[in-house]
Length: 418
Image 1 (tube, rainbow, N blue to C red):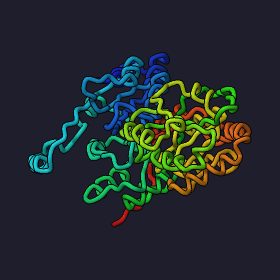
Image 2: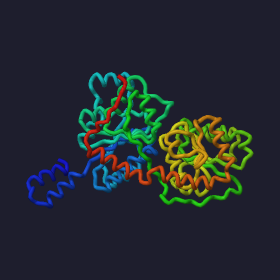
Image 3: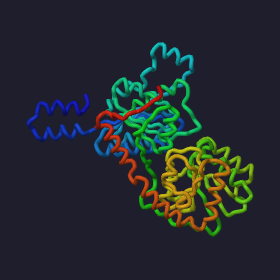
Image 4: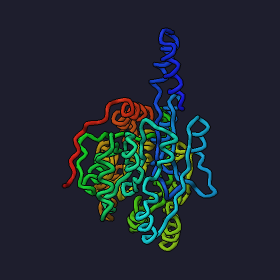
């Protein structure tokens, strides 16, 4: 029996006692919200920041939080430990990959057809948020949620026009999104990608902001540019998404080799760090490119760098761009994810329409010709981002979840292909 069940019984037996009635009302207002993350490729990533910080905010408000996260072999995820210490109930699920033949046998025997059921029956959440790190991630728990009648929402952190959900999975994932009480995206572009991929219309989905890891009043001093201009590429080193390979190619041109400009790669290895180092060595770019790895001191980065360069092939809403702008550094970026809503080309940054050699070179060239304005453009970026982006995104998202949790079942009209 949950605590609120005990209070209900107590209230019914002492209906004339105003203190018990007050306690009952307060307890009734307490929600139990579940978080189910699809994160699998890495122990943790930027896609996990919004839901986890919202969870902390809910715990501070006195609500109950339960988490379902993939187990990492011999690896402790400190962010999950922090949630447990704050009072969340964390369940680490096992994930065993099996072949197609085994899956067919399991399906015939009705095995593994209701993933997460034991967790849901034990946790008894009032609402579950499914955090989808990448739009092709499976939302296998949604049929179980619908079977048990538990309302749920889906948060999509990144979507790519180069990756597709195909075959029978289209129908399965379409049902997942169409059956959600709420759908949240970090950019309208990502929403359009998912809708096109699944042939479903989600007209009233909500666009939400991502949290950042710099202080609200961040204002690192402008670094000297007497010897060189320093660009920071703050992202995991992953050519497929972040396109550092294109950046290396562009900067290989004679005009860039002759200019006093450096590119510093700050980020964990997303699978392409070795190739990046080998390309730098192969083409003699050791004086142009510097690979530093991951650092938690984001504001420290901007004490020594003049601008952000992020030539991504796809994004959701890049935390690195938000943080750079908050710190008064203009971004040189591609028009992916939320960029067109947050960056005015030529006013507070420079935007390449797409991640191609020619377009990235053009954006960098336009920026270079105005390098002596970078400080003022960065100041404008700091003002712009504070006007267009939430300054308390985690708290805002927590309130959205409480609204979804306590409100009536959403009656939004979703149109899917027949």
